[in-house]
Image 1 (cartoon, rainbow, N blue to C red):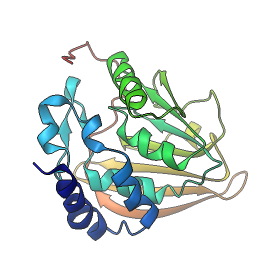
Image 2 (cartoon, one colour; image 1 turned 180 degrees about the horizontal axis):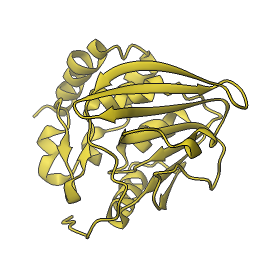
Image 3 (tube, rainbow, N blue to C red; image 1 turned 60 degrees about the vertical axis):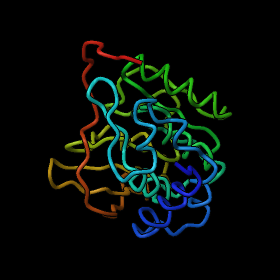
Length: 217
């Protein structure tokens, strides 16, 4: 497989047609090597428009979803970001290139270790991976400029709304399968929030319960 050709095709055939038009984001997809964050057994799927299976029944989002979330979060260089669900570390890596710092909260110790290993191997030093349950957000370090959820939620917990700064954004996929909508919620004041529906999708719910370890890395 010609990796660079496959990467180019991913950007031009999957991601750009999905309204990812910010040239900085498209350039970022050339810089952050997605194949370095994909489990060895699925390297051949690194640039394919599919959810990649991960251990414990989890999955890696499609490339176009990761790119669209990164674009729609509208992160600026001085901002601190909370990512709920670290997974393999790829989405954290994309966000980290845009942000001052990313705090990624991960429920599974094995994914925490994997994300840390992948981020370090790819020279990304402005991400801290915390072990914990981000179902209610993460009060340590709050309020954040941006909060991103890497999986879907049935509803957004009230606590999360309080953890974003005025002017800050929450990007989250809300609803129940098969109809979910990605939303950007901007905090406009102490009690004011403005919600924009970004796109419809259907992704696996964020794992909010500690399951028995079934990891084989």
